[in-house]
Image 1 (cartoon, helix red, strand yellow):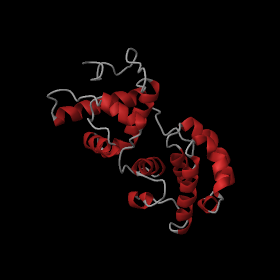
Image 2 (tube, helix red, strand yellow):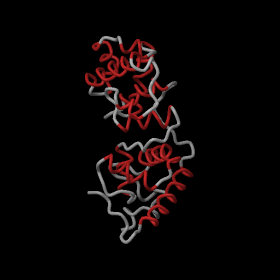
Image 3 (cartoon, helix red, strand yellow):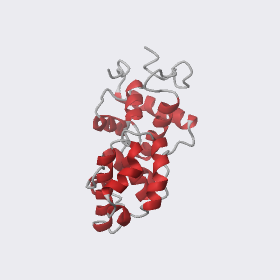
Length: 221
């Protein structure tokens, strides 16, 4: 069940509380960043597609070999399905992921002249790319705050901290975009993800030692 937002909390009070949480989180995690390894927008896009239902740690173990074999969209777009599947097998859902990698790379090579697009609409036209992946790419590769990345960690923390009452990622993203300034959207997802991985875990969250326990509606009920 979603965590209820604090009773009688108005919109302005919620915004102030949200920004206070943001200051606390950025103070706790000043070095928060995307934990996928990449050197350019193409590598980040491929890594993000692979990260669906898979940990960043596992993706980072797979991508060095993948990028060694297929260093450009042109090369990956011409790759054989079975060859790509062998490299990415351990990331799970490898057949569909291989299809997405090849198709999106081919589109980048042919439709976008080899350059990963830097607009939401163009990115969403690529196979395997939804808003979450597009937001990761735009925010981290191009410094464009088009939206907020909502993964399982952001979903969980946004609900536990009373920043949303929804489970649908699109609705959660909308709520977070209304609470935080646009300039903070990319870093917001990073600090929430880092806190989720280190303290506010899905199972057995470390509430007792959590530095945000005084501000957390889940604890203060």
